[in-house]
Each structure stands twice: as C-alpha cells, then as structure tokens.
Image (cartoon, rainbow, N blue to C red):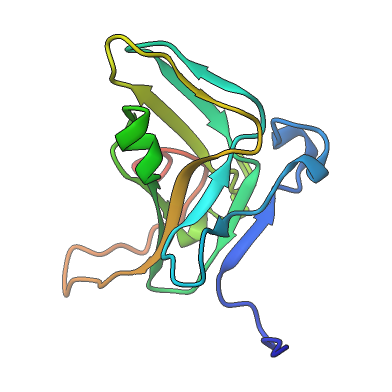
Length: 160
C-alpha cells in the first residue's frame, strides 16, 4: 500500500486527558467514509444518545482534525439524521478551521450540538452509530477583509 510521507489531512483522537469526554481513547472510532466514493466521514456516537422532541443534545466527539492551508472541515447531518430522525445540527453547518486543531482550550476536540425539530418523536442513537458527517473542503480568500489574527481558544474564540 502507498504511504504518504507527510500528513495532509485527517483525524486523531484528542490527546489531552482532561479535555476528553471519555478517559479511554479506545472508545473513540475515527471518522470513516461509508463507501470509497463518499465525500463525508461519519462521526460515531460515543454513548447512547436520546433527544426528546424539541430538545438539544451537545457532545464532544473526542476527535480532532488536521488539514492544509486553504482547507476547512464542515459538519453536516447524515442523510439518515435529517431525513429519518428529523434532527439537524444546531448551527446548521459546523465549521472547523485549520487552527482549531490542538488549540490550547480544548485540543481541537470537535463539539456538536444536535436539535430534534420533530414535535412528537424522540430521536435515538446507539453507541457506535453514525450521527453526523464531516467533509474536508477548500476555500478562497478575498483580496481584502483578511486578518493576521491568531486563534487564542476553542469554540467561538476568533471574535475575541
């Protein structure tokens, strides 16, 4: 099998013990594609998840992602999450920037909030089931309105 000599993009378990939601890294399954042609990598539930109608559920994935300049990782619902379970990501699409990886506040741990927008049905996942999917994407910078600021923390820290 061909091995890449340098890391380009991928996933790792969070390594800073006190920033993880579970103490055993063996419980973490790195995101995986459902098929060789899939764009999205599924993130799996670390525990059973139950979301009552109209409620929210937050969880840490205990996964961090590394990527190249000009790339971003976006979080989307899996088709089965949105269509079959009537659950969406609270902020619609999650955006994980390159400099979120290994940040001092949470070691790049990807956190996700789900919203059950069904008014009658409880949404459930068993531990190990795919919950959301993440996709690496390229982006462009504008000629103006850019910054030289650096990230100083985790979620929501770039506007401080």
